[in-house]
Length: 314
Image (tube, rainbow, N blue to C red; front, side, top):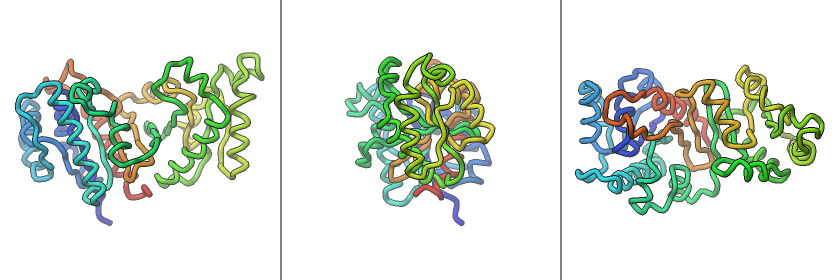
């Protein structure tokens, strides 16, 4: 079978994106797994290669670069505009079957705002460009897969979202997402909200009144799911293979587990788009950008995960 083509966006030109993208191209396993298609600016990537003594790597991949014009006067506004245009082009490649998945380098939300881009981040951009309603985020860290019942809301609001109907809806969405990735075996685990799963109501009633009824509804639909399981053990149990995935009850509950296990190996997947998208799970790191010291491991892993799932994604 032909290797999948992965469109790799360069990210914000003022951040570490250009450095980690070109640095990733020095890894032979990337070429073993896929046909990389770099979407960015050729001149910027060449400069990123030069400061990292990777001129030979640039020569190797320069014909794989889809060159997108970028203003020479690289202001914050111009960087935001360029970052958006790289994503837009990568989406076009996937829609037109010239790429099978997208792996994204980091972008800067403030720069997007200064460029008057009407989206707050990657997920919103991709959803808007593809007319996708509410795509799902999944983290993969080694063998651990984590979904999130809520993400960018306050903790008090996250607790208020732990409701039976929402949990049931997300179990269905997560089950469908796993099937899209070709994961059709194993049990999904649902995290508890309260310590020790509420201890029969002594530490809160959410498990009894909201989570258990949602799990029972999903089981009645034939979904292989268990829970609630105390958050202090559920992620370890999933990591050692007892469960194929975890639905965490809020943002940090899942993020802390995955990033403590392997910060640089945590990869974010956006599922529900017409194509698969993976991403590094770190920011643009402006404080170290263009010093040639950025670590590319997360970018490499994002490309490899995209290549792994792209042929199965449906």
